[in-house]
Length: 446
Figure 1 (cartoon, rainbow, N blue to C red):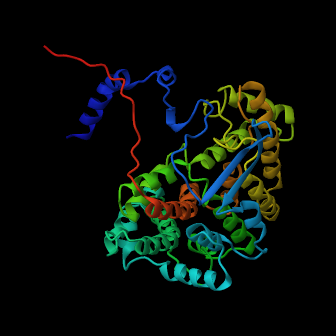
Figure 2: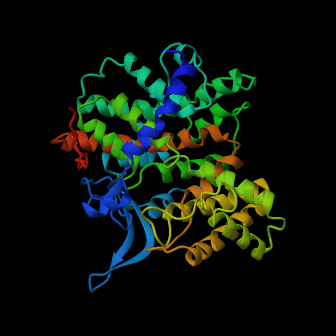
């Protein structure tokens, strides 16, 4: 069918969908149905058990009541603060924490050495894959490019349909190693063919970490400073896993429960993560910050800054959605532990890059925004900056283009997805099959 004709037909028929598919919010309360698998306070409905990670946002008092507390994130029984603190200044932790999440134990020296060797050997793509798959259909949407590549990689893997635990562990390691290549090569193809920029494809260095290799692959001169690699490494660790209750991880477990293969499950997770409500939050923060820079004349004038943030919240400025992006979280209340860890490294990187003025603007907004939100909104828990408030600023200072922000999230989160897939495979009893209550009206003809 002619595309224009189809578009016109869809436009004409959209009113039918709007009138027949719209379900009033009050019906959810009437029938006791949790909208979006959340209760009326926004807390996620329990859908499974896991030993991989844990989020803590509230503590129980002696009388049994729950009170908000500083947020905690635990990986396999270890507090995220302890894990990041245990890494010495020049030590990169992505690979160590990946081992921990996948296998449930912190690696000894021999184990991490062997694991890194496996990642290095797997950090390669099939012959001519970059030319024949990645460069054949360049697109600004690098998440789509990666998802296409993931599904295509299945055709190169003879173990795709075996679905044994051994094969799934191998495939997980393979994809963790390949993700940086899929992302960066996908960007270079787009940047060359769509932006008419120079093309360069660097090979990964088997002796370098994931963070180091990402910067090496991305930059024309393949160089980076130890601080740059360290900050990126920390950002990747903080995005690797988050309690199991997020949309893309749940997607991984749903698809896995059907008996589908690794590549299909991870491709589905990618499709979930690319949604702006999930993986694109830091881009909205960056857009908002640029809007603030353009409209607040004196960044040091706290009253002017507070007034403009109020306009954003009242839908009078920026995108008129009434959101101060990077503020608040679905689970955390008083603080997001990832944001607190990342902020320490952001301050160091900002000083090294001469971006102290921008850093102060971020810090002022971090302080003022919760006050304004508390004044103007009815909230059932505290509001604090989340990890996305600073992650975009980090990527910008590292010279990473915005097209790669969500793919970077995926490069980290593939570890968590893989850990949950393995856990689901081991414990899988039944296919995950949620129920929907039908409120359809019965009709008769004739």
